[in-house]
Length: 242
Image (tube, rainbow, N blue to C red; front, side):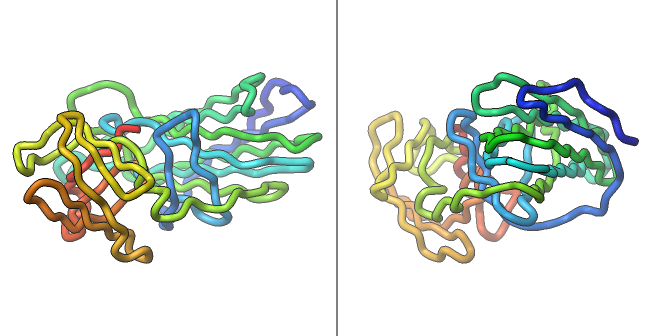
C-alpha cells in the first residue's frame, strides 16, 4: 500500500510503502547523539535499538533526484517469546524545516517502510531510529537501513573514532561503577577520577583492550550499544550513553 504524503519544501514528494521483508544482516556504525549522526553507508546498515540504550541517528546527502530509503524492523523476543513492539522512524533535513514520521510494528516477522523522495537540490538528511519508549522491560529489536538512488555517503568512521564517547559500566571492576569517558588519544577517565587506557586490538572484529587500576579487559565494540563480552554479545560491559 502506498500513501502520498503532504508536499515538502523544495517540492519533495515522499511516498511511503509498508511491506513484509525477510530479515537482513550487515554491520554499520550507529550514533546515539542527534547532534553528530553516523554516516550512512552504501548497502545494508544494520543495528539493534532498544529503550534502555536509546535512539540511533544517521546522516546522508540526498538529491538532486530520487532517493529511496528503506528501513526494516524485527522485534526482539522476551524470555524466548515473541513480543510485539513498534519502531518509530523520523526523516528530516538538517535545518529541520520539514519532518516525516513513520511507525513500523513487528512481532514474529520483519516489517518495513520505504521512503522515496524527489529532491531538487542536494539536501543533508537526518534519519532517526527511535525504539519503543518507557517500561521496565527491554523492548526493541534489529533493524536494517538502505539508501539508493541519488544518495551520497560520507566516509565511514574508523574503529578508533567509533569508540570515543561516554559509557556507563554495567558490571563493576575494581569497585568502579561511575560513568567513563573514552577519549580520542587512547585514554579513559571515570567520573570518580580513576584513569586508564584503551587500545584497538583487531579492527576487523572490533576488539579492544581496556585497562584501569588492576583491571585488564578484552571487549568487542558494538556501535550504538557499547563494549560487550566477545564471548557473549548480549553481555554489555560498558553501555554507550553518548
